Length: 198
Image (tube, rainbow, N blue to C red; front, side):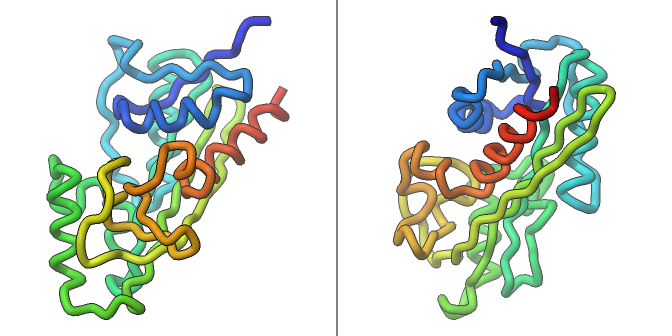
């Protein structure tokens, strides 16, 4: 039986690697937009994570003709009224590096007590195949540290501390992170949904 190919609407190699591990046991073959020369960058100008995820999945389907998955993730910090939220990847500017985003977050939280630094990562994953649109959500609770801990992962991982694990995402193996992360939760839900689509 041939594996069914699904496109992940991203050029982010870190994200592809992380999600491939989650979807591997499902029987679906994950491919990225790197394999499609006509694919371009998608402007994430939606006001919600769902708007951005659907926009990316629809564009990916148009470019590739294959069922497409797309996700959007936001870090929501309570002391900042939910910021950076939908703009997490460009918090410090359109072309901001992971480090620049983290430094802005630390500056804004300067002087905020640890117990008030609660936050959550939220991921919405959308699926589009030309006939159907489906979406799921995953959430992981944590707190934002005052300094970096760990060297794995990407994005805000060195600052996002998961209390029940007593470590940051950046201190976890990929497998450990996938078991509890917002993205892992959302993509496992999506994997279950995909199995029941046919």
